[in-house]
Length: 209
View 1: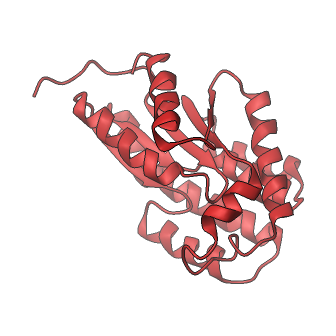
View 2: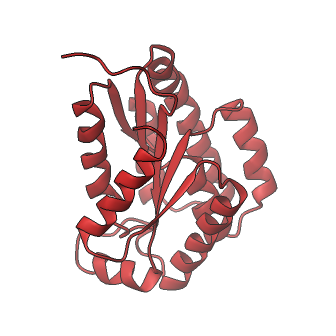
Protein backbone atom coordinates (compact mmCIF):
# COMPACT_ATOMS: atom_id res chain seq x y z
CA UNK A 1 0.00 0.00 0.00
CA UNK A 2 1.25 3.46 -0.86
CA UNK A 3 1.28 5.60 2.23
CA UNK A 4 -0.55 8.90 2.02
CA UNK A 5 1.41 12.08 2.66
CA UNK A 6 1.42 13.10 6.29
CA UNK A 7 -1.65 15.26 6.92
CA UNK A 8 -1.40 18.56 8.74
CA UNK A 9 -4.69 17.73 10.53
CA UNK A 10 -3.58 14.75 12.62
CA UNK A 11 -5.38 15.00 15.98
CA UNK A 12 -9.15 14.68 15.53
CA UNK A 13 -11.62 14.60 18.39
CA UNK A 14 -15.28 13.60 18.33
CA UNK A 15 -17.66 15.33 20.73
CA UNK A 16 -21.36 15.33 21.58
CA UNK A 17 -23.87 14.52 24.29
CA UNK A 18 -24.79 10.91 25.02
CA UNK A 19 -27.10 9.67 22.28
CA UNK A 20 -25.74 11.98 19.58
CA UNK A 21 -24.65 9.02 17.43
CA UNK A 22 -20.97 9.88 17.33
CA UNK A 23 -19.78 6.33 18.11
CA UNK A 24 -21.22 4.97 14.86
CA UNK A 25 -19.56 7.67 12.79
CA UNK A 26 -16.19 7.60 14.53
CA UNK A 27 -15.77 3.97 13.45
CA UNK A 28 -16.53 4.92 9.84
CA UNK A 29 -14.17 7.89 10.12
CA UNK A 30 -11.29 5.69 11.29
CA UNK A 31 -11.91 3.23 8.43
CA UNK A 32 -11.99 6.08 5.90
CA UNK A 33 -8.65 7.46 7.07
CA UNK A 34 -7.03 4.01 7.11
CA UNK A 35 -8.30 3.36 3.59
CA UNK A 36 -6.44 6.53 2.57
CA UNK A 37 -3.21 4.95 3.83
CA UNK A 38 -2.86 6.71 7.17
CA UNK A 39 -1.80 5.05 10.39
CA UNK A 40 -4.69 5.84 12.74
CA UNK A 41 -4.79 5.41 16.49
CA UNK A 42 -8.43 5.14 17.58
CA UNK A 43 -8.85 5.90 21.27
CA UNK A 44 -11.26 7.42 23.79
CA UNK A 45 -11.62 9.51 26.93
CA UNK A 46 -11.77 8.98 29.77
CA UNK A 47 -9.62 5.97 28.93
CA UNK A 48 -7.11 4.91 26.35
CA UNK A 49 -4.55 3.36 28.74
CA UNK A 50 -4.89 0.73 31.50
CA UNK A 51 -4.63 3.41 34.19
CA UNK A 52 -7.03 5.78 32.44
CA UNK A 53 -9.56 2.97 31.88
CA UNK A 54 -9.50 2.22 35.62
CA UNK A 55 -10.14 5.88 36.37
CA UNK A 56 -12.95 5.85 33.78
CA UNK A 57 -14.75 3.13 35.73
CA UNK A 58 -14.60 5.25 38.88
CA UNK A 59 -15.85 8.37 37.10
CA UNK A 60 -18.76 6.57 35.41
CA UNK A 61 -19.94 4.46 38.32
CA UNK A 62 -18.82 5.86 41.70
CA UNK A 63 -20.48 8.88 43.36
CA UNK A 64 -18.19 11.89 43.79
CA UNK A 65 -18.25 15.66 43.76
CA UNK A 66 -17.47 17.76 40.69
CA UNK A 67 -13.88 18.62 41.70
CA UNK A 68 -12.97 14.98 42.33
CA UNK A 69 -14.58 14.08 39.02
CA UNK A 70 -12.57 16.73 37.16
CA UNK A 71 -9.30 15.74 38.84
CA UNK A 72 -9.75 12.08 37.93
CA UNK A 73 -10.59 12.96 34.33
CA UNK A 74 -7.53 15.17 33.97
CA UNK A 75 -5.34 12.52 35.65
CA UNK A 76 -6.59 10.01 33.09
CA UNK A 77 -5.97 12.55 30.31
CA UNK A 78 -2.39 13.13 31.45
CA UNK A 79 -1.60 9.42 31.28
CA UNK A 80 -3.41 9.12 27.94
CA UNK A 81 -1.40 11.98 26.45
CA UNK A 82 1.93 10.66 27.70
CA UNK A 83 1.39 7.02 26.82
CA UNK A 84 -0.72 7.12 23.64
CA UNK A 85 -1.51 10.46 22.03
CA UNK A 86 1.85 12.22 22.06
CA UNK A 87 3.88 9.15 20.98
CA UNK A 88 1.45 8.52 18.09
CA UNK A 89 1.61 12.12 16.88
CA UNK A 90 5.42 12.14 17.25
CA UNK A 91 5.79 9.19 14.86
CA UNK A 92 3.46 10.79 12.31
CA UNK A 93 0.29 8.82 13.02
CA UNK A 94 -3.19 10.29 13.16
CA UNK A 95 -5.15 10.14 16.40
CA UNK A 96 -8.95 9.95 16.46
CA UNK A 97 -10.21 10.35 20.00
CA UNK A 98 -13.80 9.87 21.16
CA UNK A 99 -14.05 12.90 23.48
CA UNK A 100 -11.30 15.09 24.89
CA UNK A 101 -11.14 18.30 26.92
CA UNK A 102 -14.17 19.94 25.32
CA UNK A 103 -16.22 17.21 27.00
CA UNK A 104 -14.80 18.21 30.38
CA UNK A 105 -15.84 21.82 29.90
CA UNK A 106 -19.26 20.67 28.66
CA UNK A 107 -20.02 17.98 31.26
CA UNK A 108 -18.17 19.10 34.38
CA UNK A 109 -18.24 22.81 33.56
CA UNK A 110 -21.65 23.51 32.05
CA UNK A 111 -23.42 20.33 33.18
CA UNK A 112 -22.16 20.18 36.76
CA UNK A 113 -21.72 23.93 37.08
CA UNK A 114 -18.08 23.58 38.07
CA UNK A 115 -15.69 26.55 37.90
CA UNK A 116 -14.38 26.73 34.33
CA UNK A 117 -11.40 28.80 35.47
CA UNK A 118 -10.22 25.78 37.48
CA UNK A 119 -10.80 23.55 34.46
CA UNK A 120 -8.79 25.94 32.29
CA UNK A 121 -5.90 25.81 34.76
CA UNK A 122 -5.98 22.01 34.80
CA UNK A 123 -6.13 22.04 31.00
CA UNK A 124 -2.99 24.19 30.85
CA UNK A 125 -1.08 22.03 33.35
CA UNK A 126 -2.02 18.68 31.85
CA UNK A 127 -2.00 19.42 28.12
CA UNK A 128 0.83 21.93 27.91
CA UNK A 129 -0.69 23.51 24.83
CA UNK A 130 -1.82 20.32 23.09
CA UNK A 131 -5.18 20.81 21.40
CA UNK A 132 -6.98 18.93 18.64
CA UNK A 133 -6.48 20.03 15.05
CA UNK A 134 -10.13 19.27 14.28
CA UNK A 135 -13.13 18.70 16.54
CA UNK A 136 -16.31 17.20 15.08
CA UNK A 137 -19.16 18.21 17.38
CA UNK A 138 -22.30 16.15 16.87
CA UNK A 139 -24.95 18.68 17.81
CA UNK A 140 -28.26 17.09 18.81
CA UNK A 141 -31.21 18.41 20.88
CA UNK A 142 -31.20 16.85 24.33
CA UNK A 143 -34.81 15.65 23.94
CA UNK A 144 -33.90 13.67 20.81
CA UNK A 145 -30.84 12.20 22.51
CA UNK A 146 -32.98 11.07 25.45
CA UNK A 147 -35.35 9.24 23.08
CA UNK A 148 -32.44 7.47 21.43
CA UNK A 149 -30.98 6.37 24.76
CA UNK A 150 -34.24 5.15 26.30
CA UNK A 151 -33.86 1.46 27.03
CA UNK A 152 -30.66 1.15 24.97
CA UNK A 153 -28.49 -0.10 27.84
CA UNK A 154 -27.98 0.13 31.58
CA UNK A 155 -27.22 3.84 32.05
CA UNK A 156 -24.04 5.05 33.73
CA UNK A 157 -23.88 7.94 36.20
CA UNK A 158 -24.03 10.53 33.41
CA UNK A 159 -26.70 8.88 31.30
CA UNK A 160 -28.95 8.83 34.38
CA UNK A 161 -29.00 12.62 34.53
CA UNK A 162 -32.21 14.51 33.66
CA UNK A 163 -32.75 16.16 30.29
CA UNK A 164 -31.94 19.58 31.72
CA UNK A 165 -28.41 18.38 32.49
CA UNK A 166 -27.86 17.45 28.84
CA UNK A 167 -29.30 20.77 27.69
CA UNK A 168 -26.64 22.46 29.83
CA UNK A 169 -23.97 20.14 28.42
CA UNK A 170 -25.04 21.05 24.88
CA UNK A 171 -24.79 24.73 25.83
CA UNK A 172 -21.27 24.04 27.10
CA UNK A 173 -20.28 22.49 23.78
CA UNK A 174 -21.81 25.43 21.93
CA UNK A 175 -19.74 27.86 24.00
CA UNK A 176 -16.55 25.91 23.23
CA UNK A 177 -17.40 25.88 19.52
CA UNK A 178 -17.93 29.64 19.55
CA UNK A 179 -14.66 30.16 21.43
CA UNK A 180 -12.64 27.92 19.06
CA UNK A 181 -14.26 28.19 15.61
CA UNK A 182 -10.95 27.47 13.87
CA UNK A 183 -11.00 23.81 14.92
CA UNK A 184 -14.71 23.05 15.43
CA UNK A 185 -16.91 21.57 12.70
CA UNK A 186 -20.56 21.46 13.76
CA UNK A 187 -22.30 18.27 12.61
CA UNK A 188 -26.11 18.49 12.73
CA UNK A 189 -26.85 15.03 14.08
CA UNK A 190 -30.65 14.92 14.08
CA UNK A 191 -31.13 13.71 10.50
CA UNK A 192 -30.67 10.33 8.81
CA UNK A 193 -27.31 8.62 9.25
CA UNK A 194 -26.38 9.19 5.61
CA UNK A 195 -26.95 12.95 5.92
CA UNK A 196 -24.85 13.10 9.08
CA UNK A 197 -22.02 11.18 7.43
CA UNK A 198 -22.04 13.55 4.44
CA UNK A 199 -21.42 16.41 6.86
CA UNK A 200 -18.50 14.52 8.37
CA UNK A 201 -17.02 13.92 4.94
CA UNK A 202 -17.43 17.60 4.05
CA UNK A 203 -15.64 18.65 7.24
CA UNK A 204 -12.77 16.29 6.46
CA UNK A 205 -12.55 17.41 2.83
CA UNK A 206 -12.38 21.04 3.94
CA UNK A 207 -9.17 20.14 5.76
CA UNK A 208 -7.65 18.11 2.97
CA UNK A 209 -8.61 14.67 4.28
